[in-house]
Amino acid sequence: MNLVHTPALILRTIPFQETSVIVRLFTKEQGKVAVIAKGGRRLKSPFRGYLEPLNYVDVIYYTKPTREIQLLSKIESIEFFFRNDRGIEQLAYASAIVECIDKSIRDQHKDDAIFQLTVNSLRFIDENPDLSRETFFTFLFNLTDSLGYKMNLDECSICGKPLTRAGYDVSSGSLICPECRNFSNNVISIEPEAMKFLKAIAFGGSGNQLQPLPDEKCADGLTNILISYLSFHLDYPLRLKSLDMVGNK
Ligand SMILES: [Zn+2]
Image (cartoon, rainbow, N blue to C red; front, side):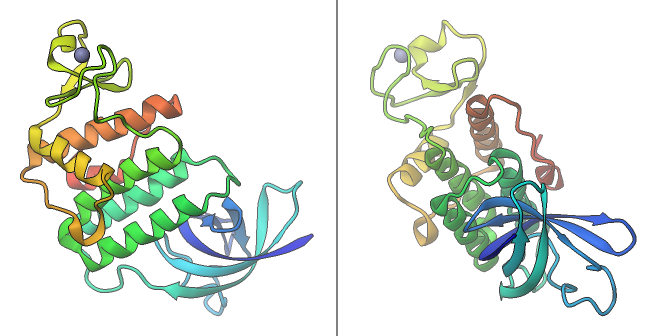
């Protein structure tokens, strides 16, 4: 049995038996790992108060390769996100980020870049609630990039012409130009403002350079495109229940 000591984000918690909790973690050292917090729901448990989704913690757990669920030994807080009065939007998009990690990253796939991206995105939403939605889109775009499927925003995937106006072709999982659009029957339009937004992120814009999106229509379109794009590359439909809180489908 080995001992692992690592920073981690709590993705989900599931009550187990009378007093325990199974905690799904996204760890810096070992990627996604499930641990059991024995007695974690007892009033006097040292784990109490830390076992909440979105918490950024320092954990020590015992690990055995033959076991699916590892044994939590110690937990401490690194940073408390979303402690103060949190708005619905802020919570919805932050939850969507951890839900997305839970559903799109393979277990025990260690990835420093994705770990850091996730922590930074949550911290940014915590400090800039007005840009929650924009941060979520930036997270999705950069996640697909880190997973090895960076979206090509520059040229049409069919004819190769430079893209000024583009549509997202659902069946090929790529962007196409208005002419090529005539040959496809499953295209989501991309508003010029949304395209500008994506190009700014692709160019490295995040954090304080993030520009707010102009309207709901633009944002809903981007949600559809980015989730459809990620689903296409994961090869299964990604559905983020957290977004139901803000009325996205
Ligand atoms: Zn084309």
